[in-house]
Each structure stands twice: as C-alpha cells, then as structure tokens.
Length: 463
Image 1 (cartoon, one colour):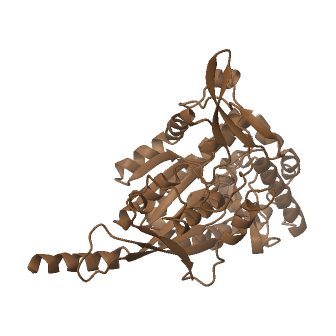
Image 2 (cartoon, helix red, strand yellow):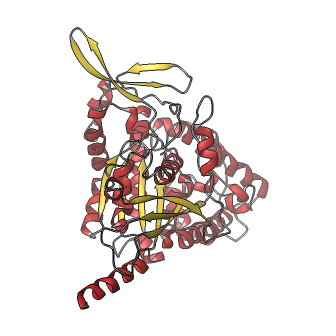
C-alpha cells in the first residue's frame, strides 16, 4: 500500500500547485489580442463538443471536460467583454470585436481528467485560468523607465523616416519655436502636447507601431490631465545638459521634465508593478502581414518596436522588468497572427519571418533558459483555402469577404522567409487584404492552430 499512498500524496500536492495559472496576452495595437482571447474562451467552452483541438492532448484524448466563466479575483478591474465580442461575430453581417481600450481580465475554471487518477484524488481536476488583456499602446512605455527627459527626447525625434516625419510637421514647426528657458505657459504646453498626440494618432493610423507615450493614444481617465501634457523637446541634442538642468523650475524645460518624471513614476511604473508581476505565462501577438503591406518604413518601425518590447521582457536576471518587478513568467509563445490571410503553404514562411525579426531577443530568451515557441495562427478564421486552375496548373487561393463586403478569391502573394531587403521591396508582389469574419453557424469558432497555442501555454498543467 505504501507506493499507492505515496502516489496519492504526490497527486494531491500537484493539485494544489497547479490549480491556478495567469496568462498575459501581449501585443501591439491591432495585433489581434481581442480576437485571440475571445477564441480562447470559446474553444475551451466548447471543448469535447464542437471545438477542434486535435493539437491539444488533453482534448484529443477526451480528458478535457470544458470550462466556465467564474467571478474574477480583482473586483476593481473590468471583465473582458466576451459576450460583446461574440455578439459582434454573430451580427449580420459579422464584424470584428472592438479593440482593447483598457485593462480587463477574465477567469475560467477548466475541468479535466488527469492522466493518472489517485485513489483520493477523484476523477476530475480543475484549473483556474486568469486571462489578462490591456491596450497594446501601453506596452511600449516600459523602456521610458531607463530614460531621463533629455535622453528620451533624443530617442523620440520623429525624423526616423520621411513618411513618419511628415506626420509630425505641424508639431515640429510649433515646438521649434518653444524657448526651453522661458517661463512655462500652461495653455501653450497643452496645445503643443495635443499636436504631438495628433501626430502619434496619425502615425498609428498610417501603420506605425513604435509610438510613445502610449497613454497619449488611449488616455482614458487621464484625458486633459497635465501628466499627459509633455512632449520630446526638439533640438535638445545641441544644448548642454548642465545648462538645461540649471534652468528654474518654472521654465518650459523644467516643467516638461517634471511631467515626464511624473509619468514614469505614477503611470508607467505602477502599471507594470501591479499587473506584470502576476503573470505565469505570456503570448506575444505580432501582425507581420499588416507591416508588410504598409511598406519598408513601417516594417522597420515594427521591428524597432518589437525589439524595444522584447528587451523589456528579456526574462533573464539582468532585464529591466526582472530588476524592477521580479516577474515569474516561465513560458512564452510568440505568434504571427492572421495566418488565414495567406494560403496554407505560406504559414511556415510566416513563422520563419517572425523568427528572423526577433532573432536577437529569441537568442537571449533561450540563453536565459526561458521556454519559448514561435508559431503562426488565426484565432478566428475568416477565409477558406481553395485551389484555382489556370492553363492546366492548380494554384492555392483564399476565399473570403473583404471589409467592404465584396467576395474575394485570390492568391495574396508569398511571405518572405527572411528580413526583406531593398531588392525585395522593389519587386514585392503581394497584397494581404483584410477580411471580415465568416458567418458563424453556432458552435466553436473556426481557427488555425489555437490548439497548438493552448497546448504550449497551458497543456502541461492539464496532465
């Protein structure tokens, strides 16, 4: 009897240790976070019924009994709007759910049968899965904590490309006339800050990703507050730092620097301290196709934004996040989203491009012994794979409905399997259109490799 009792004790300890898991869904704006979370909840809710989760062993083996939404622990955080998202997908015509505009969370209780059943363990176990969602615009603020105001001003000069600089023309012209030593005029600083925010919003609409400060894009309850009325100071590289630091507290420079420090300490730091230290697992979503469509300047901008993001989430002991908040993330997935917007034989190239784009961060993560996996997925499938015949040759194609409601049958083009060079951009022959969700006939949402993502993120907790 000693061996069975020891196994029972082991199983009971495992039940206590594995009964809760916290998953952060991370991604820049328009990377598909809301769609991913909606699909994740939907797939687990339909487990054992209509959900197709063959790449998730607990589902394939018939051990996954399903999931239900339960009350979350933090009553001060809004609940993720799953019902509203499903209503959008079930509308006539269907449309994509509204993107994230604030922090939200949701708790699922997942019930499953373990691979081994102890005599005292019962026939089922439960895992509490806490899901966290937050605006992608806020993610790029963490690197601000490594700057002071002058160094941040230098890093944020918008002239990193002609197209991006053109979006800040009005702000640059007005800010160039600002005297750092003059007494601060609250109205003038507020107007210049709004012009800078307008430039950031225009850059986001134009497809740029490396945008700071993130709260300027989604201010929420901070709209109109002085903490959001600062901006990088143009031409600061030509000034002596010591001379700037000697300017009186009422000067433009000192006022802007004070607001920058307040933003760092009272907006950025608490957000990461209060939220990121709670995570166990993380998935980073990346819209590579949108960046390819947008052209070389925006693709490079995405590369820079992701490099900054992954540097912040370098999970080794020397990373900024580790030094500040001691996170405990022990597994990471990086996913290229909207895989249904290219034909199936392009999925491998999509992953290869993602790995090339994040080559250096991935090396650092693996050196730090953080399990990481790159994959491509479509959280909610919007197209169907087809073949077309032309002159006796069969070619892959996609069939779907674009955002204007027009039916499309097309081959979007090939995804590069390495970082594009100038020659690639000169001969590019692709157009990855945006599709609206396909009409749903009840049951689980159709997807591509959501089961693989689930297996990597939570599968080991469902043994």
